[in-house]
Length: 151
Image (cartoon, rainbow, N blue to C red; front, side, top):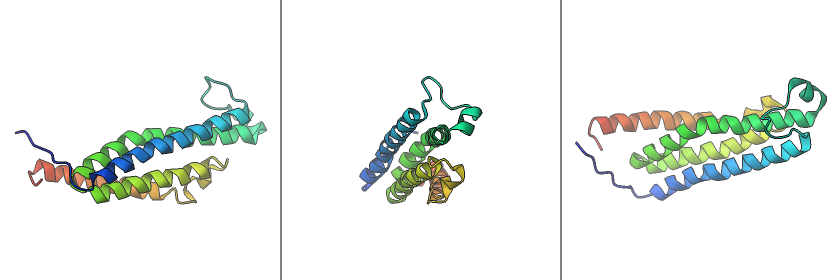
């Protein structure tokens, strides 16, 4: 049976939370590009080799910045789906969690790109994990509600 979905009030905030991920990845791309220049690691190589990192802190920082960016890209499809889906039922919650995820990924990236991978979660980056779990479980709950016809 077809279902009509009405975009709820406050869904614009959900859109803004989703759009914030574009700014996040642009920030990370710039950081990786600058680290690539400083390290001298040429395209198309994705990472510096271990011996390069052992000899150069800039190569290590490049690898860390690149890994932060790659990790974000690994999580991004889930986060975007969960944010937009959850937002159809609970827009304020979805926008808040999506915004926290994006903001925490900036902190995660800055910590990681320092060259010390342990710092990726010491500056607030761990809030991204909490936001992700909120998006995951909130979407699951909204999905159950939809399946049971409670929308």
